[in-house]
Length: 190
Image 1 (cartoon, one colour):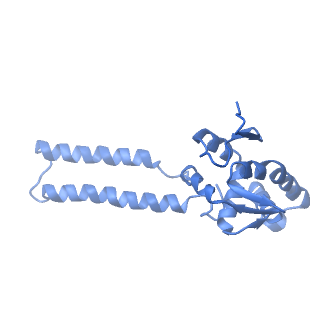
Image 2: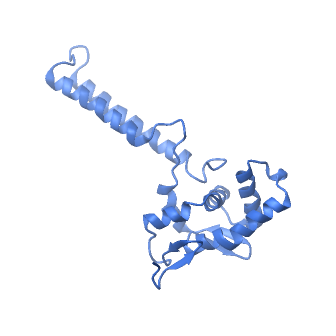
Image 3: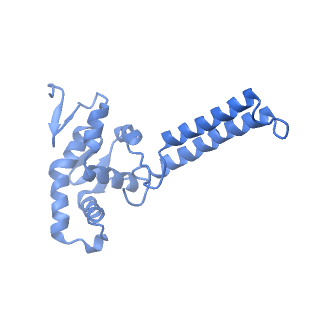
């Protein structure tokens, strides 16, 4: 139920600009691919964009066509949807400003970054990876403690250094991938 301080746009209850959106509100906001595509395009362009250019690109991504192949009916359908529903929803959430056909991201869009990380389809989720790495580390440390893992060719300190290095390298790769696969960083959104 929306309070007097909230607005409802496109079925999404959004807080006023002074409040931080709750996780559920952010997920509702990002549940529509056109809103995600709009954010992606605006982040990629890094400057205010024209609604017509945004509509063409969103239509091209939706239909998996080049912009030159988009006909006027396809463009108009997306243009109207963005203008009447999706951009006002993003504006009410304080994520964009939308005036005179120009769309610009606000600083609040950075709040969405944690929710916009994309895990590639052929990748293991990082939580599962770290769980496996922790299990491996526990086995090695238990083996060292129990005297099962040999310490003559490789010292205990070398084993510990190797395990810490595995976590450090994994964390560096994790940070790199999160930045690489974030909306606005890739050529086309997923």
